[in-house]
Length: 426
Image (cartoon, rainbow, N blue to C red; front, side):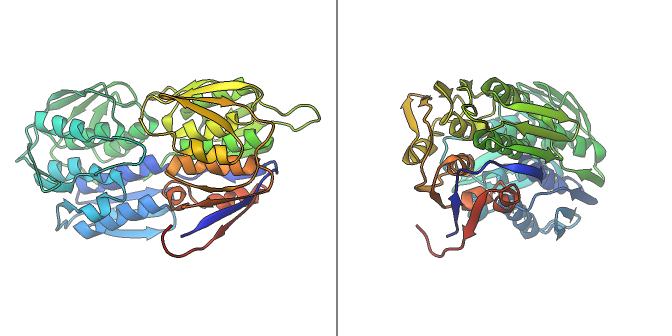
């Protein structure tokens, strides 16, 4: 099992190119099931989750050409309307084939995702919405069995804001008979990116990016070309890493407008941020007697508030801020697993309910730590970049799910980081 060896204490300096967004790529690839014509998608990151999605679609019969960061998909002869457990268990986003399969083919068999390390992520809102559109759904032996001759437009009010739920129902509605209104819809930029692809394919969608999305169903969709938006979480992760190490980095291909809440908190902490349409620069000079960031309280919530996917990274930054801060997690009930590992590096963090209280330390020290989930991994990398001495981070397969070539990008900025290949399970 691969691990990172990181010798910390060096500022990050230079330029890096931000990859395409994982959380936009996955639903866009699944949208290929909605048409028999060709969908060409560029700026797709080379990630484990993308590979899993491609494998799933190929199993269904989708013809796929995957060259670097470009993927061409043709679902004109889909043969298997099923997402099996062996793939769904490794990537919960596999549930995103449910809506497209049901909308175009009238049936789907999709495994329930099962447990998730960071907390419950129920799919009941997906099922509730599809049933409102006329689908007959049963749960049998751990699978969602869904059937509908043709979905009907409906007004759907979800009990909670759900990103994948909004995406699944939006994809189902584009081929439904009549108008569908999604109330309490998620507003993430990735949903806007998916809507842009669907509209390019011939869908009629209004309101993507707001909490009320209106979809007028059409009889069929065609092919399209689309470039995936830049990954705002990768952008935010690098911004936090540079701020924490006291560096100066320009992120090319980044879109600052999707990160308002994170940038606001970094400015509050004392980082210098400049941006234009396609780049962001962060600077925190290391001068004698200065360089300590101010502690910043954060509370995660749905977009456009502070994202839960940036909580661990910002907590690592707060570990060396000058004072005490509080981080409150409102989205997932078990997303503080990185706290014990950061404390192994010398951080001073205590947990009270869904709030972590961080007392800024003068510095961190290298140690052996273990990644527990995707974003926790990123938080530990930032902690290791801050720490004096060498840190070993085990189980970085979590990181490979969502960050493209992280060690190479960090090395180009001056970080002393290397991947060490391992074998077996730990």
